[in-house]
View (cartoon, rainbow, N blue to C red):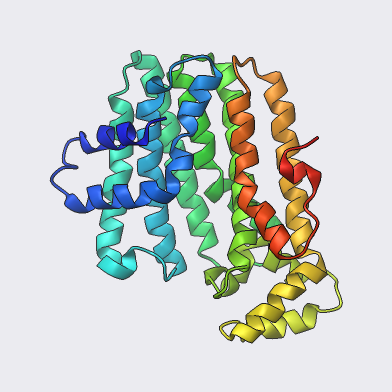
Length: 317
């Protein structure tokens, strides 16, 4: 999928050229989010269609993705968020603009009216479910059941939609499109678990350490029975101290929190393999590679922590 083509598709939408901040944010976001925006094209290719057919879907996913991150950073008070530069109000307005643009992307898709209606309904469901997840995530909660509930509303709809849009724009039957959407949901779950692990092992304490409940590794170390649980709880109150952060990170490894997250990652990877076998595709390699490549930075993290890299994480059976 040519990301420049996707960006051009968005820039051609009514009003976008009149809002320069949209174009600048689109360019900045593409540098780190393009892998997700390419998913509709990968699905098209897997179904034997031309990736160009998926451009409207990829553009819609790009717009929704940017809007979600704009809002999420404000809710998390993430110091890396764009709102830090422009203010919360301006960032919120941009989020609304990108969300509206996502619908315009699909309205222009060159498909029959019934399929376009299905695409737009799926986009509306994606946006609404993500909003519910962000609302739930902004509240205090503390057990693992809540964690999975939030993950399945906040983190998976975008990926399910990316696969679904690609399938519908490739002309797939509804049953095939539904199966591919489920494959996208599995990827969304895997991405969130991967993000949980990567976020807690950064050199500075990211917001996850302050909002303990929305990171599975931290939640495990807080609630599971292990010898250092009380010490871990004490360290959380001092987490801005680099020494406390390093000690807490070491406890995540020793307590089994890292292994627990990796176990759930393996489950999603295996479920994806099994589902791929059931979907009639012209080419499965691209989608298989997309799952494997999600784990490459995690492999490096395991190596940095001195942990054995499981064969399944490398994509081996």
